[in-house]
Length: 75
Image (cartoon, rainbow, N blue to C red; front, side, top):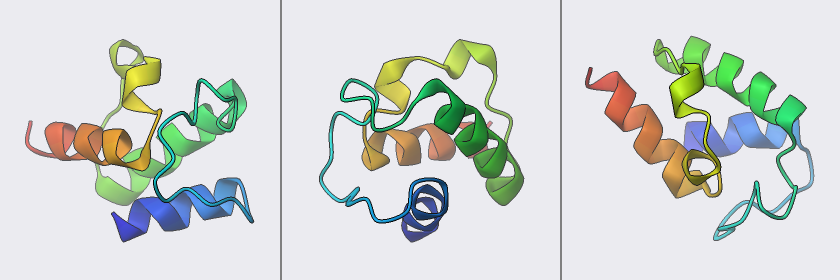
C-alpha cells in the first residue's frame, strides 16, 4: 500500500490520504487525477485498469485502490 500512497502524494502533494474514505465523493481525486492515477498504477503494478473499473467505489479510499490493484494483479 505504501507504493499507492507515494503515487497519490505525487499526484496531489501535501494531502493526508491515510484513513480517507471519500477521495472521489469529496472531490479530492478529480477525473483528471484519476486518469493520471490509473496510468501510474497500470505502469507501476503492470496491470490494466479498464473503463469498467472506473467507478467511485474503486477510488474512494487507498484501501479500495489497493483492493483493485490486488484483484487485477491476480487476473
